[in-house]
Image 1 (cartoon, helix red, strand yellow):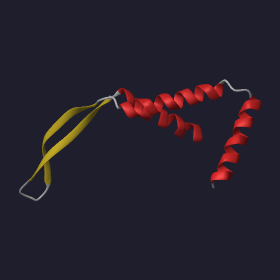
Image 2 (cartoon, helix red, strand yellow):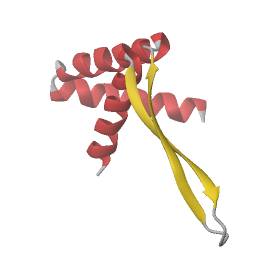
Image 3 (tube, rainbow, N blue to C red):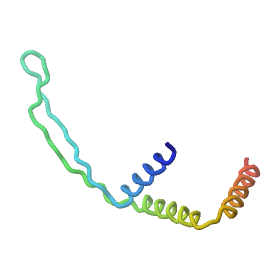
Image 4 (cartoon, one colour):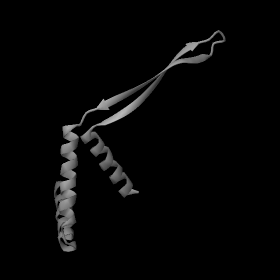
Length: 92
């Protein structure tokens, strides 16, 4: 479950970093003689959201951190974990 959320965040961040398109639908209605809404016009519009530099920067920083952690041995990871826990205790 945690991995799914992590992956979803990565995908959303990457999407925002590179830009994306979204189709938006809108309907116009009229009220007929009996008081019911009746659709008369549908409009489909494609909106483009350009790349976001801060999202790209964040994505690259996260990716770089993950790549550097992948290269650590189990002993180095344990040492980093202990260092971070000690730092949390000092600050909290």
